[in-house]
Amino acid sequence: MISASFHTPDRTQIGLPTADGELDLRDAEVIGRDPGTDVALLRVTSAGGGLTPAKLRELDGLAVGNLALAIGRPGRSARASLRAIGVLGPELRTPHGGKLDHYIESDRQIPRGFAGGPLIDADGAVIGMNTRTLLRSTDLAVPVATLRRVVAELQQHGGMRRGYLGVGAYPTKGGALIANIEDGSPAQTAGLLVGDILTELDGVAITGPDSLRNALGDRAGQTVSIAIQRGGVAQTVSATIGTKS
Image (cartoon, rainbow, N blue to C red; front, top):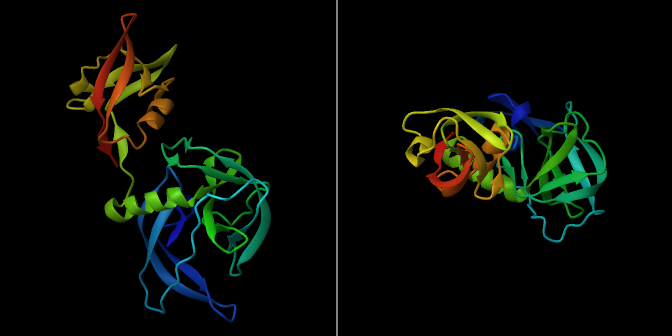
């Protein structure tokens, strides 16, 4: 089962609606979470009947103005909130280093208690998971494509593997100034030096530590081109990005 990482304790109870409108409470535990996309993966640990998987839908064919239904359970009763799709956005890097393949924004704020619940289309298919914590003052739905990718990683590793360069940096004019380099890190292997200014990573502009973290994102294991300024001279180095959970 999938829920919002920010709102889900490591061990919890989940309520499954029954045909007579009651809730079947089951024990569950978190087996992986990704703060970068606000996704938590849960395993139901108590006995009971089988669960029916929800029908999932990618964004193909969806359009701004389509009706959607947000589902939540702020108390013992399930609630629904009708809305229209306001934005179908492109790829988005979150402040916590995650990547949304796309993002969905509806025309209304998500009510309290709806985070982690599904956003469904007019045919009852899940098109995303509601979240309130990824971007300040903006409620989004994490699309199915991202949920599939993140869940597969959580099932296998228990967390998302993030790109790791091994530098400490702070913002400066034109990029991120390297203040320290970890021994044995990809940065050291690539020949980066303290005092270098990182300006681009594979064509992505670097303006400080946050943009560097976002640029590294899910590039673990990839060899990338890093543009730097060293002593006022522009240079380019190659680095193989490491992995950090």
